[in-house]
View 1 (spheres, rainbow, N blue to C red):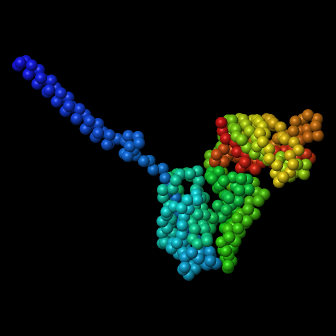
View 2: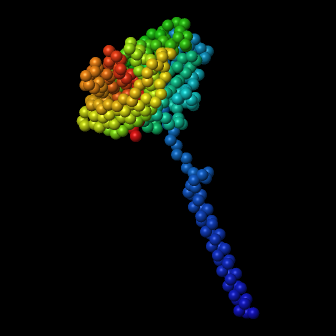
View 3: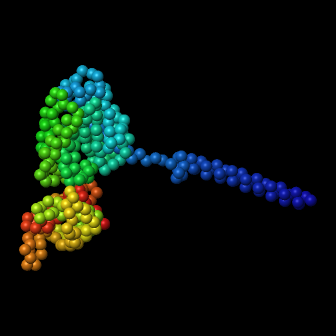
Length: 366
């Protein structure tokens, strides 16, 4: 009986020690978990990747008080007082909170969702100041602030990009010619000096003036690339669109095609190949489709000028009427999501060359 009691005491004592050890272990693990983050738990750290954009607001003279009529104050020559009193800010189309200092004219918008580029619109009444900024760092300072000059720059970007079916964000690595910006800013101020200028008339005048300035200008006349020199080495592919012309040189057919491109560079010399295989066609302006294009494949050699690639495609030297004649010119340049291809017909006899809007012919690296 004595031995039995002793054995029971030993077992019970061991169990108590084990229970105590488990309690200590659970408490220790709990302490560690509080200090660490478990995925999906409330303690998971949140990484703040938001962007802050700042700059200076410079409001031009606005002769017509109606443009700023949302605030019932006497019109100020620089109109800045009205912006301080009542203005809203949108970034990429979304309303955001911001601060605007009435003495330093500094504005600041925080917690902006990261994007490839940012379009800011500071609006007061029916008048807006607009700015464009590429994504570079988390703290972005607008070089032109929000001003008539930044507004002119945005209208020029929109006019040039829209004509070729680009979005403004695709030119994040380009800056607009300062000469064109200065010229358009002067033109816009002239419009704002007009009495009775309505909001719709102001926006239309700004858009039309910008479109007139970029019309018939090449990319390099309007925009200058600011990023590092682009390397074309590699293989590219995409489904794109181009136009076929009739015998009068009028675009009559939109062609959807699967395109591949290979490219090898050596210094400023480039060699490569294109394969363009039509997969669908659509008439333009109800012109009848009399024939569908066939697959086109060709090799090319071209030249680099900085980040720009250009070459001319010639017809085969096969004894035909077009033998060894220029068919089309090709100008290729990097954009935010690939390389854009601007092809222009050179065949003035039969109009067999390819015609593109560069924003509809963007290839991406494979």
